[in-house]
Length: 136
Image (cartoon, rainbow, N blue to C red; front, side, top):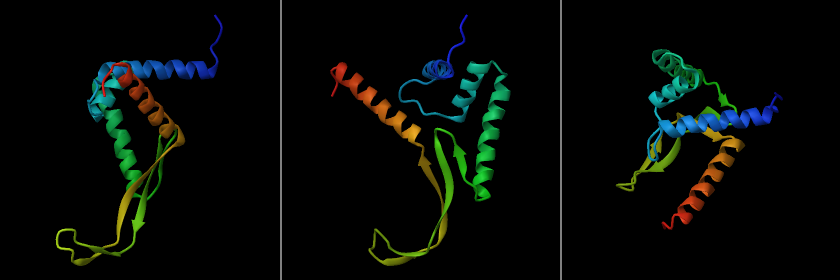
């Protein structure tokens, strides 16, 4: 049997993952840490408790990275970072009264080109499917 090219293997793995996700998530469901643990369980057959620990560990490490002020880079997904916001003048929207907004840190996310492409293509496919079904 011939070995599949790397790109074909990646596409096959991507399709399999999408199939598992499709069975775990129904349209309109929100993705949760529990769902992510279920995907790992379905893909690898590891004990569910271990899968939950893997997901929790990932998010704990991501949080620690940001708390230390480091960037969190996830290939083909994006970059999370902490940005410093300076003190600036603002206005209370209810009263219209001027106020000073204190300096603070905020979490920033910049999606990768791959993520942007996937989201745009996903929207195109959804729009085409919606038109084909006759819904407006």
